[in-house]
Length: 471
Image (cartoon, rainbow, N blue to C red):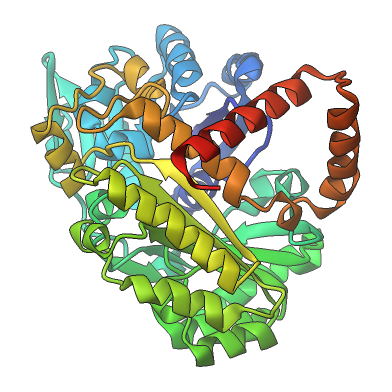
């Protein structure tokens, strides 16, 4: 008798993002002969899980889990599913970086670290065996036995990515359309996993250990052609951690799919030649992890770029309609106030060079398993200790003992006012709301609470910016 596996991913946001991890896992399960049903739901829809249990009576229930607010409703659902007698499994980033904490949840039977395609099928095969079971032999598995948590050896990084493909038929693809760079049916597409670089703050170092694997160009063409033909996709957001790891391969993919696109790219890759190629091949947006305006900090976090690379990328794309979205981080260990000022002055210089530079400034949060996390612990950082605490862990709740946290928050708010160009991301909405906001601001008439909060924040940011001498 064919066994059914129920896959579940729970969200707390109002927008669904393409659940590639679960779609690849579903394909792997199908290849081993399992029936699969997938629920991608919001936290107020947990009853759909329990209804599916009655209808399917699945062999196991697998949850996709991140170290974020959705973990709270996932714990609630896991407890009820376990109470009803079903085997519970978690996979995803949370179990990959915090396996012992994840398995401290009594209702959880198993957790999976890293790529899930192989360990999930090996686990289910072991569970189907009659008699005694040997879970210790399954690489990448975390489990509890005799009230003791076992974290098995990590599994080798999945290299043959073409052996799997997303099970798009399990979802309503149109629910995942993104409005981006003036198009309405943009979808994220994954062409590779991992990243070979060693940025000291990045999850990739903890989870993938500087490894990188790819789909073939032909496989990417096949996936894109399906999304174009069957669902009308009109633009691509390449969702790779580093799409341009191999520039030649990236160019081949872009030229093959023939759609407007955006992707993450390292600043030193945007040479004049590459920039000209991007302009000629429908690039709409390039995401660059700039991180800091201080060369000392760039070296400290092992970014492996020069500050000048940021200016070179901005210059090479200047005059085009390509938005250069640069992300920066404040509050790294050992960062000085002067270096934070360098980050802000660098952003201002970049936007003078290229008005289409959009700068996002965030505050550093220590991520488990990374070199900077270890350094943060040495400097007095106190991490959460439970699943529930980690679920609530964010910029607002994270205290960095080496920094003035109030100042960091102020500088973050200033950056939203000073450097973000919303008109590049929401042009239709911006063209309507911006003049309206100005008119309502001048007339001192507000109707919507969120608008009032935004204008109050804007005023506060202006005052803080003047105080800090930024604007």
